Image 1 (cartoon, rainbow, N blue to C red):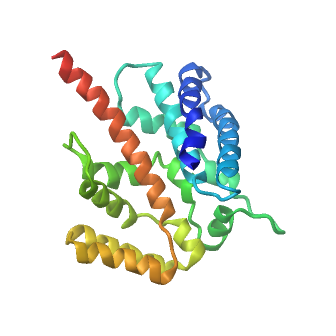
Image 2: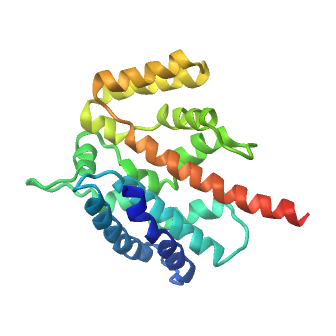
Length: 237
């Protein structure tokens, strides 16, 4: 229900990127967020006010806008150019938005930054999606079709390296570190038992690696864009 509610805006985000002409990419962020707020309203209406996909709305909003911007300049998908656009839009984002303030009303992200110094989704965006390009996508290199095993390994690679603020908010750095170690072991020694150990740990500790799941979604998106263009090039040859 949530995905159906937010998906009508995906094309709007890409079109906004395609038509964006300002040299200062940071000026794109208000446009992206304006659409994102409408997506959030639709999400909350569809889920009885449950936050199911705020992270995806932010990260995919940036990704779709960046693709639109990139394809307004070239008919090729360059990962370097894509990352550069994301970094330009989100330049100094953590420093700008995580300003220490007194009083209540802090978001989960602000609380985690003030407590542990982790930038969460904003920090990941500012880096140009480091987890996606350094850990997620390498697991999919050379594949022309995705399957459950390839995506599980992709998730584990991200989760083994990501300081997931969803986990930090529900627990502490020690539990996050234990989770990352389990993911690393499950990736390096991939079998049902080791993967099940990751799942059981999450259930026992009442944690959810939602941040890593959001980054998996972005990884699938980036891979899909690259693969679609690659397939078209192969057809022309």
